[in-house]
Length: 145
Image 1 (cartoon, helix red, strand yellow):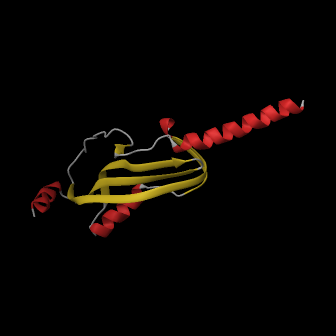
Image 2 (image 1 turned 180 degrees about the vertical axis):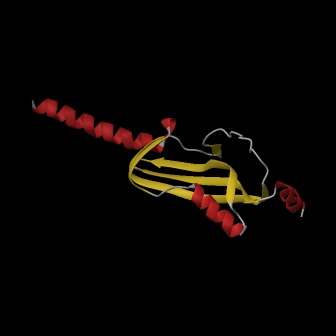
Image 3 (image 1 turned 180 degrees about the horizontal axis):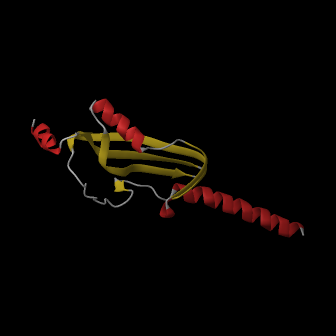
């Protein structure tokens, strides 16, 4: 009975150590990778003008949990909110005060680190800041300016 308890305890210790070490060697990214394929959706009308490119870099981190990179799943007790569309829109309004929306949004992961129960990711989000106009004919005139 004591020997079985000893083997069970040893198995648990080996599994915990193996789990922690496997997190360090899994999913390390050395270059930019897209999170998903870029899908072009045609706009119905051209009642906007493009103000320019918007880029945002933000780091997400989490502790006390697990990342499973091959199925894109994160389960953590404490984590930051990551990057959102609102963050990119706020950045667009800082750069171009007339920004109404951001289109053609791309999200890339510049760097990921998995170390046991701790994980970080560096996101680079890009898009086009646009301003809506009421008259599509005036949009082409303003775009030429």
